[in-house]
Length: 67
Image (cartoon, rainbow, N blue to C red; front, side, top):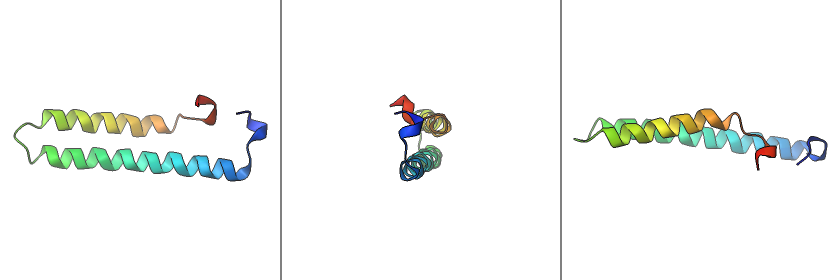
């Protein structure tokens, strides 16, 4: 989608969606780390947390042109 075709409402919606996805991934990473401390086999959950952390970081680099 060309930048000149984007409305202010679209821009606000895009930013809100990216922010919500970032927070969700951050929360999932936190939850996985908490669970990893309570299990006998923490490595899988630690890896899951790392994937969510990376995903949250990558959200900031997304733009509508990536779709």
